[in-house]
Length: 132
Image (cartoon, rainbow, N blue to C red; front, side):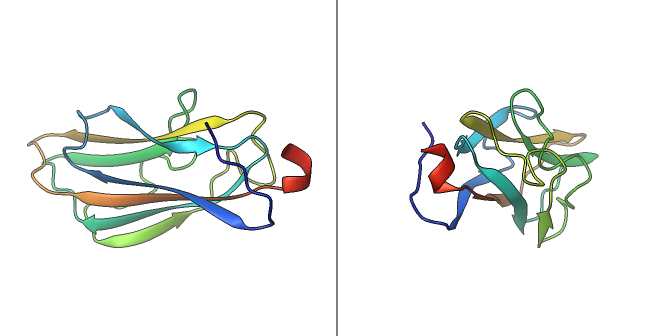
């Protein structure tokens, strides 16, 4: 269940993942975006570079649109850096019409990864006078 707040503040859902957090291509729950929330940005902070042999891809989104917030190529998973993405979907003052679970998916190919960690942070705001 999503958490509701009674003040005009920005909020954040955060999830740390690693190359071995789940099987390649398996979605991992970040948290639930509350009804009425507007996503402002998603930051993917690569703390340890991912090192699969051919490709390393992190996407962030919903079950119906797995790359709604961060699409393939939106982040350089092989370099230690933080990348802030302003998504086209679920952003631009488009409020979630219902509580919406958000997921991160790491997919690798080629030689299996032996390293890689990242923090995914989804920043959102909501109008507490409208959606409580």
